[in-house]
Image: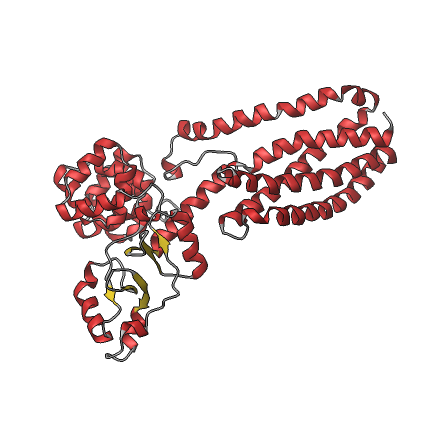
Length: 447
């Protein structure tokens, strides 16, 4: 591909201060692509192309950014543009932005809102952080269960333009207690005289506003819902968690889990715009912990120094055994963490999980031990090879049990299971695996 054929990037146009080119680029790309291009830029540079956006597209692009990027954009706007942008945002998006913003920006944002929008935002901010209440939208069309279909459609036409979604509609009784949901498609295809109470789906799942937002998003995923009704402690309807917010919640939760499972703290923001120092700081703490934990392996080696002096060939298989045990433990830990995240495993399933993973470890150990026995016999003789093979079986079973148990125990004591990451499990299995190996070698070889 020649230089002339390469697609023009927004960053290149910004480097050359080509304002006309930037306007054309912005006009030719959809909001999500513009948001991605802005997220790749340092905040002080992103504000320039953002100001070039047309007013009717500005909000669409802004809402595609994550709260950290939004804050950086807001800091560079004049007061009038700052207030206008916040006023037009969806209440749930605005609440999340203000909730994560520094106090100075949050105070400026709330002060610039109209009284009605300020009250709505303050109500959402009153819910606990990371609860469904922070992510739900109160902008909904609420229907009474005694309405006819004809009257309900009139209400939808009158108020639907102000709502975030009308595909599913909450139905309530006289006390605003949730009866269930009704699909817009059902209203359109039903007889005008039909009462909503005859159409409402009373079995629709619901969640409380104070429940964890991630749990609610997972529930939507499992139940294949477009929107999940949110109620207060008295079962009164307060809002809807919509599918777009649920997808963002699941993506954020999965990103955090992946980071922790790789032995790193989660880093928020676009990877291309995150600085080297920030990435190093996120990874350093785990690496320090792991290098300290790895001293256990050194201590074990010292404890069996006499055994190694008598049978030096045992040292040849240490990397293989520690690597195998670490890999088996990491696989088990990753599988259980994922199963916990999607609700396939619960705390009371601990004994079932250990029993299953132990048998998996046994099968894997038997397979690998057969290979180790053949290779070991050719290299160092049958005695050491037998010790290695038996150690492989024992280490694989032990690693699978440890890897599957630690995430469940972490959940039981209130720690995120992903914190018990694969590198930590691998490091612990390395040390304990060596204990198994040298103990087996002593018993088999009589040293």
